[in-house]
Structures are given as structure tokens and as C-alpha cells.
Image (cartoon, rainbow, N blue to C red; front, side, top):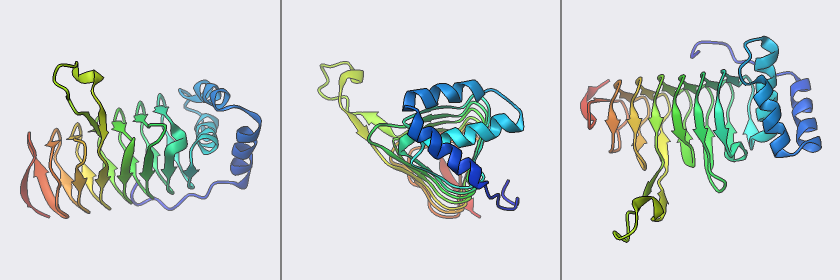
Length: 209
């Protein structure tokens, strides 16, 4: 993925996306996506991209969307060029959120991203099954069930060129520096400096790249 030449979408795709946006409701466009969400043909992949262009805030060229992808509040998402979304990825947006996936990102299959306030920078790779969380309940007052307490949104930033290993978990408010490496299965609860290699539960710095 990282070495492929950039892909430029046809003007017909943009025109079709604009047509869908003007003639259908959001719910109707989502229903249309369901018709193509599991297909493996070139036409299915193209239709998924066109539909996301109709729903998202902005979509660059070359977006690839795998099968079985789920999303909420795609209208808050901005995708750069040549972004890859793997099979069965779940993107959990929020009505008042903002999510940025910059050029060349690779989101591995079965990843879950709490995208209520997130920035995934250029050329970031997320391995299969990565989980990025972006909110916590305050837990106050203690007399209430935790799920009834206020939700605190905490922005997550993954820096340019970072690589997040298979099954890693990034907790709310964490910032991963550019070109850092997060080991498989790591639990990242603190910021990671640029070029650091971290692993473990909780994640600890092993060395510099």
C-alpha cells in the first residue's frame, strides 16, 4: 500500500456522488450502501467509494473500502488521498465530532475506531484488530451507574508515519509521535514520543528506532 502510485478517481464518480447527495436523503444513501457493502466486484468497490463521497465531509482520490465496514456519522469524517479501510472495520463517529484520516493511511481489518475526535496523520498503518478509544465516563457522582455519568471526549492523534501493531489498544487522549512503532497487543495509556518503539501492557518504551 505504501509504495503504490496515487490513484485519481474519475470525474463521473464525483458527479454521481453529488447526484446522490442532491436527490436522496442520508438514510436512503445509507440503505444504498448496504446493497454494496459485502460485494467483491470492481463495481461494488466503486459504489462504496461513491456513496462515501456522498455521505462524508470530504473524500480524496483512491479511497478503498473493504467488505462489511460499519460507520456512524460519516458526515463528520474527512479522508485524504489513497486511504485504505479494511474488511469489517467499525468507524464510530459522533454527530458533533471530527475525524481526519490523512493521505496514505492503512486501516487494518476488524479495527474499531472511536472517531469522535481523532486525527490519523499521513502514512499511518494500523494493524488488524486495532482499537482506538476516544472517550471515558467521568464516573461522577459515584452514586450513579458509570454509564449514566457524563461522557468526556478526549482527542487521539496518531503522528505521521507511525505504525500500530496488530491488536494494540490506544486509550483516550493519547498522542503517538511521528514514525513511532506500537507493538502488537500493546495497551497505550500515555503519549508516545516520535521514533519510539513501545510494547507491553501497559506499553513501555523499548528503544528508539
